Image (cartoon, rainbow, N blue to C red; front, side, top):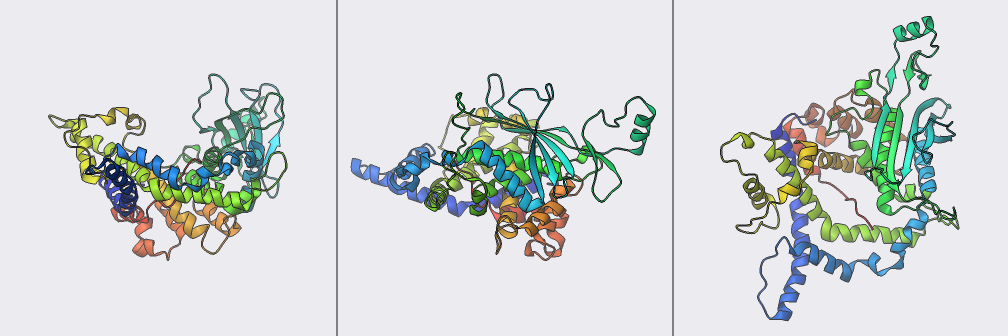
Length: 457
């Protein structure tokens, strides 16, 4: 979506500016604790340093974090069994998009491991839309990184392919893989086939206890399922733009917004039940979850955001023309950037070379900003489409998001998708600013901020 490096930096600097007051408030609270410590020593307090942050965050949390003083924090996973969470996802998709997840037995050889489960995605008229293979449990040699893979993309099967199959001994025009006539058309389509891979703990060996997820695990599953539903609901004729085959700085939007659904009270009621008693998650535990999030936001959230912004700025700095200049010094650029833009100033004459630990410099290559960018957009859409005056499970809101974002895959400019969800009359889209993209649109998204952050309990 970003059309130039300058536009990316404009977004990041605007985002950093909108985050600055929050970081200053966080540091001020922590600095009070540091002042108290030095007062006990009878010494003058030095300025708050980068290495003070983790220590005083933990100290503040110990003193103030309600959830850490409650046994409830250790009980949440009992309400998040993997089976009920998957059932909740199916119920959520039914309410939002009119589709559901249906388990299907697999013959020997269809899956790559006996633990893999197949889900068929069907609509309200029982039309088959997609296949999802869920490989969710840990095992030796398996990658621990949660991932969504598109094994086969959705695409239209041409008349030529059908004719060739009819003239050959092969009666299937698609190698025997799943196909269906898309509702409302006469066109045969290849159905998307998706693998959803996670690393959750296995059920107990005696079968008495299911796999139980932490809140972070639930959000991870919702995140990856956000990618999956993008692949499922995209309606494109060409597989090169099917589902998640869209702009790098747009692809995380459906998955990030799904994280907000995970802990919404209306959605929790769809799946959060005790695995033994079937008791719904009690209201006091929901409040504990909310307080835990608020405490995190109050003392650590903005600084975590700033850390991500700094890394994204560094990613941009290393991928501009600077490395081509004589005397390029990556460490000096790192320290200069932090001195200019960080709330806690970098120590004078520091000899550290932190950037050597930043592996995403290689993986992302000037696109590390993308997750922040999609978080800002997701926060805006969540607040204005799924929250204002309606339930998070509102069907009209779900249909709007599906029709303006999900169904297009990569076949529509991401800015037009965002403008479509928010509406033509939205102030942010004055004079078509969002629809056109460009530096002003990037600046606008930066000013939106990031809303709530993910946190682990």
